[in-house]
Amino acid sequence: MDDLIAKVEKEHIKEQPADPQPGDTVRVRIRIAGEEGQPTRLQPFEGVVLARQGGGINETITVRRMSFGIGVERTFPLHSPAIEDIEVLRRGDVKRAKLYYLRQLRGRAARVKQQARAPKTAPTKVEPPAAASAPEPVEEKSEEQTAAPTDLDEEIASQ
Image (cartoon, rainbow, N blue to C red; front, side, top):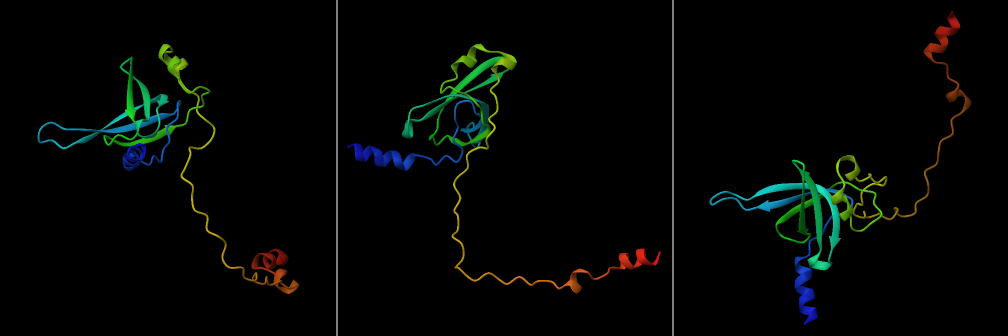
């Protein structure tokens, strides 16, 4: 039974190129169904990740932003088909897994320091060096080639 559940979950898990962590500023693009006859559209929600919960297909992030002076929090399932993508705009430098204390802070105090390191990227393939071949010989220049006078040298000498 557990194998069947794991197999179904594995089919629905998305690969996340951006791995949002608490403290990161993210932009989540959600597909919103349009009115009758209208196409679906993407609605961005930009804010700070307060927490990351769960695991596997049930993993969620809680994102908080200020909208007209009111704090708005939304919880997004990471592997939901309604989420188009999650873009990490800034990496935050925090020392806690849950940032619920930001709810009581206002203004500058509610900001999260930016992390000094670059965002995580997908590992790249490193190609092995070409077949071991002999290095090409380097030609040595004679004294005549290196000390050849230039037009500028001749002009200076004539003055």
